[in-house]
Length: 304
Ligand SMILES: O=c1[nH]c(=O)c2[nH]c(=O)[nH]c2[nH]1
Image 1 (tube, rainbow, N blue to C red):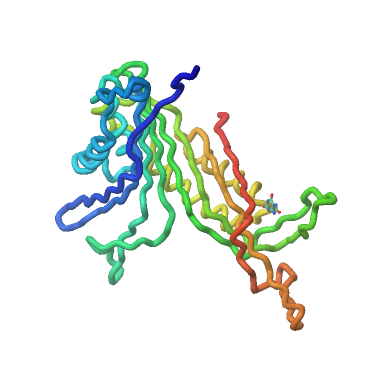
Image 2: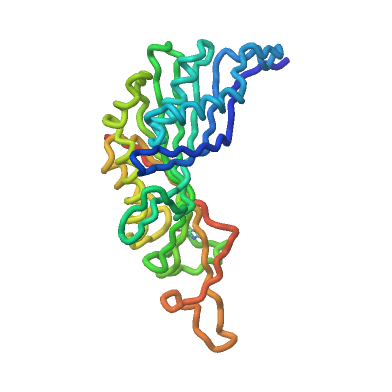
Protein backbone atom coordinates (compact mmCIF):
# COMPACT_ATOMS: atom_id res chain seq x y z
CA UNK A 1 0.00 0.00 0.00
CA UNK A 2 1.13 3.53 -0.63
CA UNK A 3 -0.33 7.00 -0.71
CA UNK A 4 0.51 10.40 -2.18
CA UNK A 5 2.05 12.42 0.66
CA UNK A 6 3.34 15.50 -1.17
CA UNK A 7 2.55 17.12 -4.51
CA UNK A 8 3.77 20.39 -5.93
CA UNK A 9 4.27 21.31 -9.58
CA UNK A 10 4.79 24.28 -11.88
CA UNK A 11 7.20 25.86 -14.34
CA UNK A 12 10.93 26.26 -13.81
CA UNK A 13 13.52 28.34 -15.64
CA UNK A 14 11.09 30.86 -17.08
CA UNK A 15 13.52 33.40 -18.49
CA UNK A 16 12.08 36.88 -18.68
CA UNK A 17 13.65 40.19 -19.58
CA UNK A 18 11.70 43.41 -18.96
CA UNK A 19 12.43 46.97 -20.06
CA UNK A 20 10.74 49.80 -18.18
CA UNK A 21 10.78 52.79 -20.56
CA UNK A 22 10.55 56.27 -19.09
CA UNK A 23 11.06 59.18 -21.52
CA UNK A 24 14.04 57.55 -23.21
CA UNK A 25 15.59 56.30 -19.94
CA UNK A 26 15.34 52.53 -19.79
CA UNK A 27 15.67 50.33 -16.72
CA UNK A 28 16.02 46.59 -17.24
CA UNK A 29 15.61 43.41 -15.24
CA UNK A 30 16.45 39.83 -16.27
CA UNK A 31 14.98 37.04 -14.19
CA UNK A 32 14.89 33.27 -14.06
CA UNK A 33 11.59 32.40 -12.44
CA UNK A 34 10.25 29.18 -10.93
CA UNK A 35 6.58 29.10 -9.92
CA UNK A 36 5.18 26.01 -8.20
CA UNK A 37 1.66 25.34 -6.93
CA UNK A 38 0.08 23.24 -4.20
CA UNK A 39 -3.58 22.60 -3.53
CA UNK A 40 -6.34 20.16 -4.29
CA UNK A 41 -4.32 18.43 -6.95
CA UNK A 42 -4.23 14.84 -5.69
CA UNK A 43 -6.53 13.49 -8.40
CA UNK A 44 -4.18 14.70 -11.13
CA UNK A 45 -1.64 12.24 -9.75
CA UNK A 46 -3.87 9.44 -8.50
CA UNK A 47 -6.65 9.42 -11.12
CA UNK A 48 -5.04 11.06 -14.16
CA UNK A 49 -7.53 13.89 -13.68
CA UNK A 50 -6.11 16.87 -15.58
CA UNK A 51 -9.18 19.02 -14.95
CA UNK A 52 -7.51 20.40 -11.81
CA UNK A 53 -4.22 21.14 -13.55
CA UNK A 54 -3.37 24.73 -14.44
CA UNK A 55 -1.03 23.78 -17.29
CA UNK A 56 2.58 24.68 -16.62
CA UNK A 57 2.38 26.42 -19.99
CA UNK A 58 -0.32 28.70 -18.56
CA UNK A 59 1.86 29.29 -15.49
CA UNK A 60 4.60 30.50 -17.85
CA UNK A 61 2.13 32.75 -19.67
CA UNK A 62 0.98 34.28 -16.35
CA UNK A 63 4.60 35.09 -15.42
CA UNK A 64 5.10 36.89 -18.77
CA UNK A 65 1.73 38.67 -18.45
CA UNK A 66 2.59 39.91 -14.94
CA UNK A 67 6.06 40.95 -16.15
CA UNK A 68 4.23 43.27 -18.56
CA UNK A 69 1.44 44.50 -16.25
CA UNK A 70 2.99 44.58 -12.75
CA UNK A 71 4.11 47.92 -11.34
CA UNK A 72 6.46 45.92 -9.08
CA UNK A 73 8.34 44.16 -11.85
CA UNK A 74 11.70 45.81 -11.06
CA UNK A 75 11.47 44.85 -7.39
CA UNK A 76 12.17 41.10 -7.13
CA UNK A 77 10.52 40.48 -3.72
CA UNK A 78 7.34 42.40 -4.57
CA UNK A 79 7.17 40.89 -8.07
CA UNK A 80 7.48 37.37 -6.62
CA UNK A 81 4.79 38.16 -4.02
CA UNK A 82 2.54 39.48 -6.79
CA UNK A 83 2.97 36.34 -8.91
CA UNK A 84 2.35 33.99 -5.97
CA UNK A 85 -0.65 36.02 -4.79
CA UNK A 86 -2.15 35.89 -8.27
CA UNK A 87 -2.14 32.08 -8.38
CA UNK A 88 -3.76 31.56 -4.97
CA UNK A 89 -6.44 34.22 -5.55
CA UNK A 90 -7.23 33.33 -9.18
CA UNK A 91 -7.68 29.56 -8.65
CA UNK A 92 -9.94 28.46 -5.76
CA UNK A 93 -8.28 25.03 -5.43
CA UNK A 94 -4.71 26.39 -5.30
CA UNK A 95 -3.79 26.93 -1.65
CA UNK A 96 -0.09 27.70 -1.80
CA UNK A 97 2.23 29.22 -4.38
CA UNK A 98 6.01 29.17 -4.31
CA UNK A 99 7.86 31.66 -6.49
CA UNK A 100 11.64 31.73 -6.73
CA UNK A 101 13.36 34.48 -8.67
CA UNK A 102 16.99 34.69 -9.67
CA UNK A 103 17.94 38.19 -10.84
CA UNK A 104 20.90 38.49 -13.18
CA UNK A 105 23.22 41.47 -13.03
CA UNK A 106 22.89 44.26 -15.59
CA UNK A 107 24.61 47.48 -14.50
CA UNK A 108 24.23 50.75 -16.34
CA UNK A 109 27.27 51.72 -18.45
CA UNK A 110 28.81 55.09 -17.57
CA UNK A 111 29.90 57.20 -20.58
CA UNK A 112 31.91 60.39 -19.98
CA UNK A 113 30.98 60.17 -16.30
CA UNK A 114 27.23 59.94 -17.08
CA UNK A 115 24.95 56.92 -16.67
CA UNK A 116 23.89 55.84 -20.16
CA UNK A 117 20.10 55.79 -20.66
CA UNK A 118 19.86 52.41 -22.37
CA UNK A 119 23.18 50.50 -22.24
CA UNK A 120 24.16 47.96 -19.62
CA UNK A 121 26.99 45.56 -18.77
CA UNK A 122 27.12 42.19 -17.03
CA UNK A 123 29.73 43.23 -14.46
CA UNK A 124 29.56 40.20 -12.20
CA UNK A 125 28.17 36.68 -12.01
CA UNK A 126 26.45 37.21 -8.69
CA UNK A 127 22.69 36.83 -8.61
CA UNK A 128 20.01 38.22 -6.33
CA UNK A 129 17.78 35.40 -5.08
CA UNK A 130 14.22 35.64 -3.80
CA UNK A 131 12.10 32.73 -2.48
CA UNK A 132 8.48 33.58 -1.75
CA UNK A 133 5.67 31.42 -0.43
CA UNK A 134 2.11 32.72 -0.30
CA UNK A 135 -0.13 30.56 1.87
CA UNK A 136 -3.89 30.73 1.43
CA UNK A 137 -4.72 27.77 3.68
CA UNK A 138 -6.28 30.15 6.25
CA UNK A 139 -8.53 31.58 3.51
CA UNK A 140 -8.23 33.72 0.41
CA UNK A 141 -8.77 36.83 2.58
CA UNK A 142 -6.05 35.84 5.05
CA UNK A 143 -2.99 35.28 2.89
CA UNK A 144 0.35 34.88 4.65
CA UNK A 145 3.61 35.49 2.81
CA UNK A 146 7.05 34.20 3.71
CA UNK A 147 10.03 35.81 2.03
CA UNK A 148 13.65 34.74 1.88
CA UNK A 149 16.11 36.86 -0.08
CA UNK A 150 19.77 36.40 -0.77
CA UNK A 151 22.75 36.52 -3.05
CA UNK A 152 24.68 33.74 -4.68
CA UNK A 153 27.93 33.32 -6.59
CA UNK A 154 29.49 36.54 -5.27
CA UNK A 155 33.17 35.69 -5.74
CA UNK A 156 35.63 37.36 -3.34
CA UNK A 157 39.30 36.99 -2.49
CA UNK A 158 41.69 38.62 -0.05
CA UNK A 159 45.42 38.12 -0.42
CA UNK A 160 46.26 38.58 3.27
CA UNK A 161 44.45 39.32 6.53
CA UNK A 162 43.51 35.67 7.01
CA UNK A 163 45.05 32.99 9.23
CA UNK A 164 44.19 29.48 10.37
CA UNK A 165 45.97 28.29 13.52
CA UNK A 166 45.36 26.43 16.78
CA UNK A 167 43.04 23.87 15.21
CA UNK A 168 42.60 20.38 16.65
CA UNK A 169 45.67 18.24 16.04
CA UNK A 170 45.83 14.45 16.13
CA UNK A 171 47.23 11.53 14.10
CA UNK A 172 45.17 12.64 11.05
CA UNK A 173 46.56 16.17 10.94
CA UNK A 174 48.88 17.16 8.12
CA UNK A 175 47.80 20.81 7.72
CA UNK A 176 50.43 23.31 8.82
CA UNK A 177 49.08 26.33 10.77
CA UNK A 178 49.43 29.61 8.85
CA UNK A 179 49.33 33.19 10.12
CA UNK A 180 48.91 34.61 6.61
CA UNK A 181 47.00 33.04 3.74
CA UNK A 182 44.69 33.73 0.82
CA UNK A 183 40.98 33.61 1.68
CA UNK A 184 38.62 33.19 -1.23
CA UNK A 185 35.01 32.15 -1.35
CA UNK A 186 31.90 32.31 -3.46
CA UNK A 187 29.30 33.86 -1.18
CA UNK A 188 25.94 32.14 -1.05
CA UNK A 189 23.75 33.88 1.48
CA UNK A 190 20.06 33.92 2.30
CA UNK A 191 18.16 35.91 4.91
CA UNK A 192 14.54 35.71 5.91
CA UNK A 193 11.77 37.94 7.15
CA UNK A 194 9.09 36.94 9.66
CA UNK A 195 5.87 35.81 7.89
CA UNK A 196 3.45 38.69 7.21
CA UNK A 197 -0.12 39.13 5.95
CA UNK A 198 -0.51 40.15 2.33
CA UNK A 199 -3.40 41.61 0.33
CA UNK A 200 -3.29 41.76 -3.46
CA UNK A 201 -4.07 45.48 -3.60
CA UNK A 202 -1.59 46.39 -0.82
CA UNK A 203 1.58 44.74 -2.12
CA UNK A 204 3.08 48.19 -2.73
CA UNK A 205 2.96 49.02 1.00
CA UNK A 206 5.19 46.08 1.94
CA UNK A 207 8.48 47.74 0.97
CA UNK A 208 7.85 50.48 3.54
CA UNK A 209 7.34 47.92 6.30
CA UNK A 210 9.93 45.27 5.44
CA UNK A 211 12.66 47.37 3.77
CA UNK A 212 13.67 44.72 1.23
CA UNK A 213 15.79 47.20 -0.75
CA UNK A 214 17.73 48.46 2.29
CA UNK A 215 18.22 44.89 3.51
CA UNK A 216 19.64 43.75 0.17
CA UNK A 217 22.07 46.69 0.05
CA UNK A 218 23.13 46.16 3.68
CA UNK A 219 23.78 42.44 3.15
CA UNK A 220 26.07 43.04 0.16
CA UNK A 221 27.84 46.00 1.82
CA UNK A 222 28.48 44.24 5.14
CA UNK A 223 29.43 40.94 3.54
CA UNK A 224 32.07 42.70 1.43
CA UNK A 225 33.26 45.11 4.13
CA UNK A 226 33.61 42.51 6.90
CA UNK A 227 35.27 40.10 4.48
CA UNK A 228 37.79 42.79 3.48
CA UNK A 229 38.55 44.27 6.90
CA UNK A 230 38.33 41.34 9.32
CA UNK A 231 41.65 39.92 10.50
CA UNK A 232 40.17 36.51 9.85
CA UNK A 233 40.99 33.69 12.29
CA UNK A 234 38.88 31.29 10.21
CA UNK A 235 36.00 31.32 7.74
CA UNK A 236 33.77 30.39 10.69
CA UNK A 237 34.78 33.42 12.77
CA UNK A 238 34.45 35.85 9.85
CA UNK A 239 31.03 34.62 8.75
CA UNK A 240 29.72 34.97 12.30
CA UNK A 241 30.88 38.61 12.43
CA UNK A 242 29.19 39.51 9.14
CA UNK A 243 25.98 37.77 10.16
CA UNK A 244 25.82 39.57 13.51
CA UNK A 245 26.40 42.96 11.91
CA UNK A 246 23.65 42.40 9.34
CA UNK A 247 21.12 41.28 11.98
CA UNK A 248 22.01 44.33 14.12
CA UNK A 249 21.59 46.77 11.21
CA UNK A 250 18.37 45.37 9.74
CA UNK A 251 15.42 45.14 12.14
CA UNK A 252 13.27 43.38 9.53
CA UNK A 253 15.70 40.47 9.02
CA UNK A 254 14.94 37.49 11.26
CA UNK A 255 17.87 35.23 10.40
CA UNK A 256 20.74 34.96 7.94
CA UNK A 257 22.43 31.86 6.56
CA UNK A 258 25.68 31.57 4.64
CA UNK A 259 27.21 28.75 2.64
CA UNK A 260 30.87 29.48 2.00
CA UNK A 261 33.26 27.23 0.13
CA UNK A 262 36.83 27.83 1.31
CA UNK A 263 38.58 27.94 -2.07
CA UNK A 264 42.13 26.89 -1.37
CA UNK A 265 45.20 28.51 -2.94
CA UNK A 266 48.36 26.50 -2.27
CA UNK A 267 51.82 28.14 -2.42
CA UNK A 268 54.00 26.54 -5.11
CA UNK A 269 57.18 25.01 -3.73
CA UNK A 270 60.15 26.44 -5.71
CA UNK A 271 62.86 25.25 -3.36
CA UNK A 272 64.17 22.96 -6.16
CA UNK A 273 65.41 26.07 -8.01
CA UNK A 274 66.49 27.95 -4.90
CA UNK A 275 63.45 30.27 -4.64
CA UNK A 276 61.65 30.75 -1.33
CA UNK A 277 57.87 30.72 -1.93
CA UNK A 278 56.60 28.69 1.02
CA UNK A 279 56.82 31.21 3.91
CA UNK A 280 53.21 32.44 4.24
CA UNK A 281 54.11 36.13 4.39
CA UNK A 282 56.47 35.87 1.40
CA UNK A 283 54.61 33.47 -0.88
CA UNK A 284 53.67 35.10 -4.17
CA UNK A 285 52.86 32.23 -6.53
CA UNK A 286 49.95 29.93 -5.74
CA UNK A 287 48.10 27.07 -7.37
CA UNK A 288 44.35 27.63 -7.12
CA UNK A 289 42.73 24.31 -6.16
CA UNK A 290 39.40 23.50 -7.82
CA UNK A 291 38.58 20.60 -5.46
CA UNK A 292 38.24 19.72 -2.72
CA UNK A 293 37.23 22.93 -0.97
CA UNK A 294 36.26 23.59 2.60
CA UNK A 295 32.54 24.25 3.02
CA UNK A 296 31.46 26.39 5.96
CA UNK A 297 27.80 27.04 6.73
CA UNK A 298 26.00 28.94 9.47
CA UNK A 299 22.67 30.46 10.41
CA UNK A 300 22.49 33.39 12.80
CA UNK A 301 19.03 34.17 14.17
CA UNK A 302 17.71 37.25 15.94
CA UNK A 303 17.02 36.62 19.63
CA UNK A 304 16.00 40.16 20.57
O1 LIG B 1 38.87 28.81 7.93
C1 LIG B 1 39.06 27.60 7.96
N1 LIG B 1 38.21 26.79 8.62
C2 LIG B 1 38.36 25.45 8.70
O2 LIG B 1 37.55 24.73 9.33
C3 LIG B 1 39.48 24.88 8.02
N2 LIG B 1 39.94 23.60 7.87
C4 LIG B 1 41.04 23.67 7.08
O3 LIG B 1 41.73 22.67 6.71
N3 LIG B 1 41.33 24.97 6.75
C5 LIG B 1 40.35 25.74 7.32
N4 LIG B 1 40.12 27.08 7.30
